[in-house]
Length: 447
Image 1 (tube, rainbow, N blue to C red):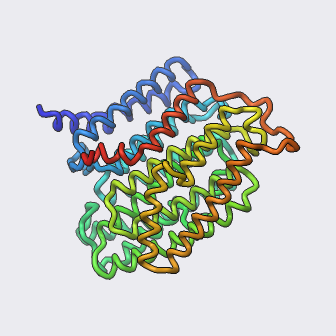
Image 2: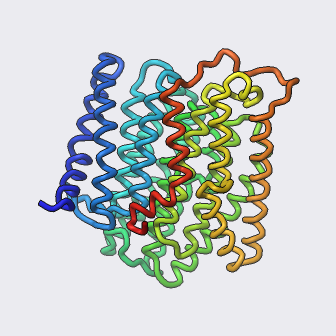
């Protein structure tokens, strides 16, 4: 057997049999047999890690898993899988911050498993069904850390109402013979495209569908919010990208301008609302909407998937690291004095999140900015303004973190530090964020 055949077999075995079996066993043992659960979780991490070299060997190939699921590997699927690996490790290492009880670890595994599988899926109906399952698992992950009813109304209701729209859209596409992602869609299928796009935009959190984002981020554990920002929300961007690659003619034209308008509005409004953020989690929530706006603008231009994959990976790892570093903290005042390790990690993650060179996002945003200015002066002005506003607030926050006022009372005394292994993990995540472009280019064979 060739290495490619072995890799295809390994991917099929891992997704269809090995990873689901480990998740089921973890569900049986969690909260009952601690050492067994730890061993199963470690086995899941090892098995999940094998997806990375397997995907590398079958890069840019499409094949079928058992059950008729058509999958394909590209730079986006690799970025989601790599982000998922870091999030699995983060969620395990911060499990002590979660109230006892529930199935937190099981939902953590299911969330990363489904997000990675969705990124490989090449059939519309399967893509949407798996996305609905991901939304439900994400909701269960939330409720394993908080019981606030507002989350039920703002997230669960929104996700499943829009999910029904997407399932209907995918069913209409299937009825017209469009089963696979990449099959061309013209103006005659405008209705299913509108249904799909509306659901995707709402699940992504773009303005005006952003109302659930801050509610979630302010009421869950920071590491869970980081998982949303790095892995769950970008699934919407992935769906919008897959849809854009399928549209033709005037339908594609109207779709692109919808993305430009919503992306620009989201970027500028989110950058302004950052200044009104009283909680650090609120700032990170608006920062996520702001970056989702930039990702949406990327989709409006004829870019290779490598560029979008780089943005998703670089932003996601920096954001989940930033969230984790402020776990248990409502204000970053005196963070440098009380917990200097956390302060250093949070400051570094800010540089990655807000695209300060040499972090990768800086160069991708320059491309978006140049393309936006050439497309429309108004769009260019909005994008430049949002970058300046967000960057100014980030600089202010950075100064507050590294050079706190002596008159401010300490708010972090008594919190546990994260420990050596977690700092190593966060350091690796930030390095991968910094080097995400050459990593993705290497996977794609460009280096």
